[in-house]
Image 1: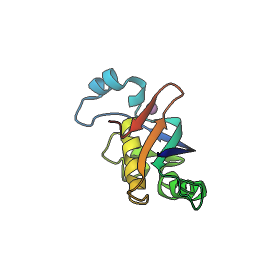
Image 2: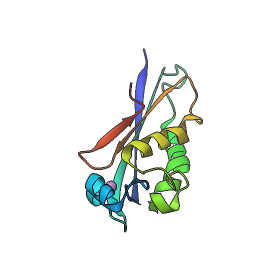
Image 3: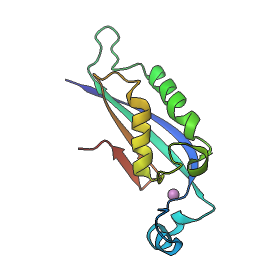
Length: 136
Ligand code: NI
């Protein structure tokens, strides 16, 4: 039987949602206030879920101190207090929606977490809007 462990982290970031292939009016109609050319910010809540067998030697699935440090080094350093569109290579040409941010975070973490573990990323853009990646 497997167990899931969850590490919750937090970052603040600014973004603008738009499709560069659309006119300003088309972007405004679809993305609304999120298309504000001068950007807007969110307090993102990030939950990283690791699923695996509990190690009988430690009683842990993974060491949460290690997981927290990994998230800080691979994700928070890049995105916290940044303008995602302007300050990050990941979103220079990729629309920084919650869906895309969650996928990028998963990609940033996956190679550092042993393949024997399943990994999921939940990202709350607001209290009411959140995404999960990957999701079957
Ligand atoms: Ni937004």
